[in-house]
Image (cartoon, rainbow, N blue to C red; front, side, top):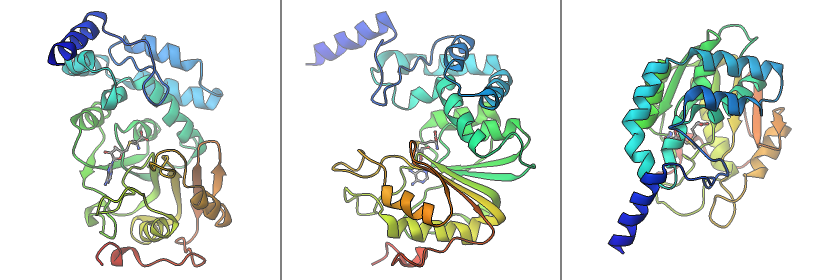
Length: 282
Ligand SMILES: C[S@@+](CC[C@H](N)C(=O)[O-])C[C@H]1O[C@@H](n2cnc3c(N)ncnc32)[C@H](O)[C@@H]1O
């Protein structure tokens, strides 16, 4: 068994790039030349505004610093079949996704504002926002290292910590004009039961966020990760999307995104739920 694993690793190293997609359907190539990747992904950009944001961000990357990161992660990438977190080093697909979100949020035309990204990952959304002069802050866990390295490449500050059911976020975070959550995985129970948060937990958390971290008028963006289904990864939490729509959010059903332009903090009075800070302690 050990021999086979060693052989597979050597084989992969010799041939360098698996020509098949990762679990999410994308073939990542974090060691390829950056500009080749930008050109390849530019063709799936959806319209002129999206393209302008993608291009602006692409030209702002420090090529030498990026090449140094490729070297830092080269051996890890070469020996691993799945890209896992090193997929974030392949900037082009992420710039395509995050500049599309930026277009939804009018990042290119909205007056300069402050933006918090919760569970930022590699910070690609904030990098677009920063490229348009907005003041940005990341909130995320300290690991894995590659997220911190990418934030450093984009020169974005991060407050380190975790969203935990019923616990306050660090007060040092402060308030923002726009709060974004995209692709969340923090919606888990402290006792590690397999299911993820349901609508009541989300209602509690979003009200808490509105009360403690948004200014008004303010914008809240939520782009869901799949958290429903037999293994809590098969489907989006559609009842939350439906609820958001009843609360006036602009909803993009294809990607389960919800965008709230708010004059006042959200209240989900039709959903039985507890105040955030009383959750998780029973
Ligand atoms: C799927 S990635 C999404 C990254 C990024 N938002 C994006 O759209 O590319 C999930 C992110 O959530 C972060 N995360 C995981 N658990 C968390 C927690 N309890 N609190 C805050 N962030 C968490 C991970 O570190 C990672 O950055």
